[in-house]
Image 1 (spheres, protein in one colour):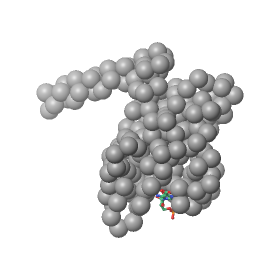
Image 2 (cartoon, rainbow, N blue to C red):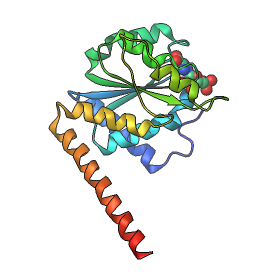
Image 3 (cartoon, protein in one colour):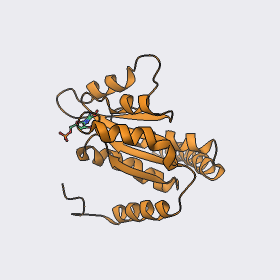
Length: 187
Ligand code: C2R
């Protein structure tokens, strides 16, 4: 998969935001991980939103079953690298979020990805049905945007700037509903 082909201005913005914030050594950042590069079209939506909210992030492909050693190393050292929240997207038998959560004390937000014949239900259940003891927050199928918003809310507990960005977003939602009602009344 050639990610450089058909790159948009938004894609370049994301790459430069990722680079700039990595140099700044931020106090809190999000790690976006995914089982395969084929999941990136969905997880990219989390990158877009985190950039909008000015939440620093890193992005990596990490697979529990294809690269177990790397997954172990990544998850068990994430807290030492200023990572405060992990967003983990995976499709099919999506054990990645649960396995990562078992190796770190950081909060893990799972995004079930729609692949194959079960349309994401397999990944949804794999992530949502974690047995007691190891929690994984589960978003709706392919909803990487909500994972980004949830991560921003979590970091917003300790970071006032990010908290204010989240609050601004809520205000925008309210304004959208007002506008919809205006449009409806005009129709
Ligand atoms: P390919 O498209 O590379 O065949 O991957 C990925 O998240 C992806 O959605 C197909 C799907 O396999 C998933 N995958 C997992 C894990 N590793 C890869 N669920 C894992 O470790 O949980």
